[in-house]
Image 1 (cartoon, rainbow, N blue to C red):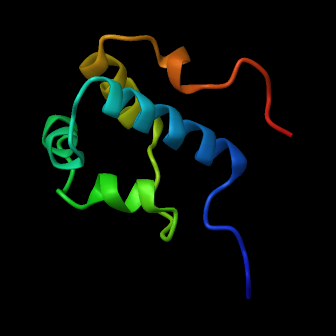
Image 2 (image 1 turned 90 degrees about the horizontal axis):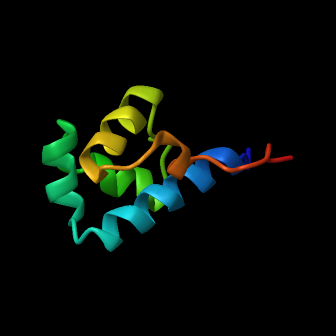
Length: 80
């Protein structure tokens, strides 16, 4: 069975978080510590080889960590 592990919306959100992580100079490990997740979680999310992804609680905490709005991680328009 060849199915996508993540939706287009998941991919958009993950890419936006990664952009912000790199912009702010966080390694995957440093962000995992601040987000209170396992050291490998960020890598699994960013790898697209697993079903690991951010949930709303993660996004809320990421907005606090990066001092930005939740809107920074979401598209302006629905993804079709």
